Amino acid sequence: MIALDDVSKRYPNGTFALRDVDLRIDSGDFIFLVGASGAGKSTLIRLLIREELATTGRVVVDGEDVGRMPRSRVHRLRRKVGVVFQDFKLLPRKTVAENVAFALIVTGHEGRLVREETERALSLVGLTARRDHFPSQLSGGEQQRTALARALVNRPRILIADEPTGNLDPVTSWEIIKLLTRVNDLGTTLVMATHNAEIVNALRRRVVHLDHGMVVRDEREGLYAA
Amino acid sequence: MRRVGYVLSAAGQGFWRNPVMSLASTFTVTLMLLLFAFFLTTDRGLQAAVGVLESKVEIALFIDDNAKVSEVLALKARIEADPAVSRVDYVTKDQALKRLQDIADRRKDFVLANIDGNPLPASLEVKLSDARQAKRFGDELRAEIGGGVIADVIDNPQVVDQLLTITRVLSVGGLAILAMMLFVALFVIVNTIRIAVHARRDEIEIMQLVGASDAFVRWPFILEGMLVGTLGAVVALSIVFAAAGPVTGAMLDFLVTLPISLGPEFAFQLAASVLGVALLVGAGGATLSVRAHLAK
Ligand SMILES: Nc1ncnc2c1ncn2[C@@H]1O[C@H](COP(=O)(O)OP(=O)(O)O)[C@@H](O)[C@H]1O
Ligand SMILES: [Mg+2]
Image 1 (cartoon, protein in one colour):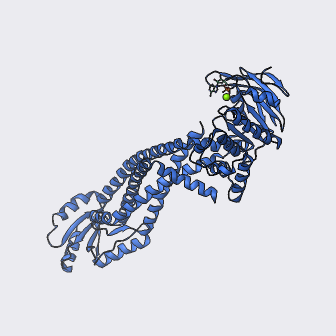
Image 2 (cartoon, rainbow over the protein chains, first blue to last red; image 1 turned 90 degrees about the horizontal axis):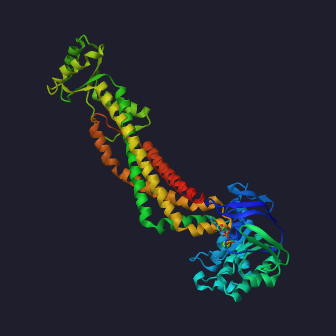
Image 3 (cartoon, chains in turn cyan, red; image 1 turned 135 degrees about the horizontal axis):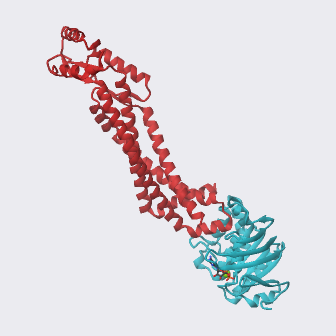
């Protein structure tokens, strides 16, 4: 589903964010990307959705060479990959339902499909009752669930979460993690960058450890620290 | 429909989100279009005038409406005796009007202005065998103006020359000014749209993240640019057509003996060109602006 071959990323200012990374993620996998701040987790994620291009090496997502893909095809890649971030990135002047429907409308869907798929995504994350609230009226966990519903509403094959619990308290974090595992159980490949040792240790999923841009550890059923 | 609705409402919102900027750029576009319309009209008017004059003879003596036919014939005989003259034709008032009407019927670019009666004078049309004598000949006859027979001496090659010079100056100067205004209008639209893009950068970021195509991101802004252009065109054309009457009158005064004005066909061409330029500038400026943002 995802493959990185010998990938390095050097930013224009000279920083090497990734060095010779080899990584294979199968369809349906659940992997944690761990490592200190600045280790290169977000950079790796940006390569997967082509927000950045690898300096050397090859990034393949769902059979497509992301680096060689013409710009005109990038939006198709993004529809296959849902993303959530630490800072939610919701539109403050739209309601919960509108924020979720937005992802469908701007990808060219209309009419009944938008309504039905929006409701499905909202009920998946348990926000049906909050559908007409604005983000400012929601708790952090509810905001992240809205972002999650938006990432899932186009039924992506891959879901990427960059420190999704970074701004949340432990209890709320667990709500989000439960949702993510459920999404993974339904067949979506899941990549999650995190600092949360408790969660990583409790779930015992595959752990890929980055340090200064290099993969220093890759374990099935791993722990946060070796 | 929702998609079209989204794009349209986003474009409209964009326009009113920053009304001062939007109206300022509309105003700039209006100015640019007014200049464009002005040059187009003058150019066409002058071309039409030149076309008519060129089809005429070299020197025309306008006959006083009160002159007797015998006096005119005596004058004709006297002129024919001049060795520099090869031929003299007597054109009555009715023939003059009929001829102009014929030219107007043949040419599509102007129509006969609405006139009461017949403002055209009768004339003697003189062809010279020696063009170098034109000045001497003209000056001699000009001395007789006001004597009851000759009302005016029109030296056509000279008038045509003057008109051609005006046309040339206008088109070169006009093109330069127009190019400058076009640049200014484009610049203002690029900036208006840049501000609109900046105001919606979060929305754009999310659109791109969830997989909206570039075209989808671009359209509302391009429409917003076209909206600015269209508004500018509507204002400019309203002014042009409101001013058309007085301006045509002034032009008729200027060209005294040529009761022509630009026809409805030209009005349509003018409206289409102005709107076309407006849409191009609006869409072009917006495209430049959004492209620059998306390329980042
Ligand atoms: N846009 C950028 N330009 C330059 N350097 C960057 C940029 N983004 C990240 N970096 C650098 O790349 C390294 C990896 O950053 P990042 O991928 O954000 O790490 P993480 O997400 O693991 O904290 C860091 O040293 C960071 O400073
Ligand atoms: Mg990060």
